[in-house]
Length: 183
Image 1 (cartoon, one colour):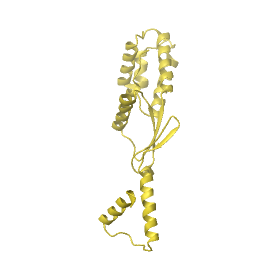
Image 2 (image 1 turned 120 degrees about the vertical axis):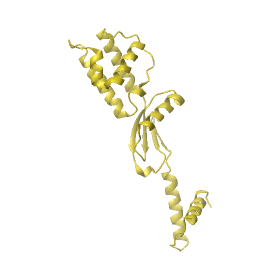
Image 3 (image 1 turned 90 degrees about the vertical axis):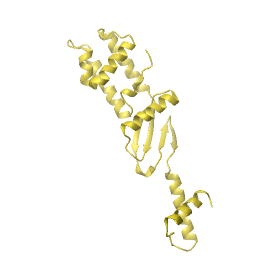
Image 4 (image 1 turned 30 degrees about the horizontal axis):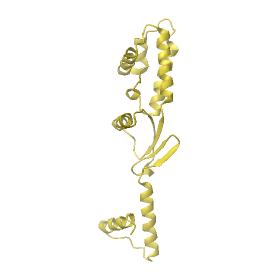
């Protein structure tokens, strides 16, 4: 079986689960008397995705008239999908389809592997992302930087004996820059 690019079918964990459910529904109906793969696929996946699935079967020399062969192929696809790695991302916004496509393509091009994204939206991240992959956690958000700057700034205000906050945006910007540079 050729390496299949599933990014046309799903990017997220929820979409992958829907795809797997669709494959299961198709394989459950394979041995019914009125089964025709070209008729059942559009019901479960829509026209574009069903056309792509038929094309993938042809690319892999699957005889769509042989129910046993089709079932084995679809089961093999299910196994492949369940083995795809899951990358958990926590970001401060709801990703759009364009963002998902760009992330999927980046992994395919740079890492030579397809991943399934499991997104969590958390506005406390502020910007950037936290990533969990293969049991490892990485914090690429700016939240820790903002928290550190606020902590240092608050400490400076309380230790200097003054509770006065800088009056201009330029003064605030200079204070933040000094703190971030460790001055």
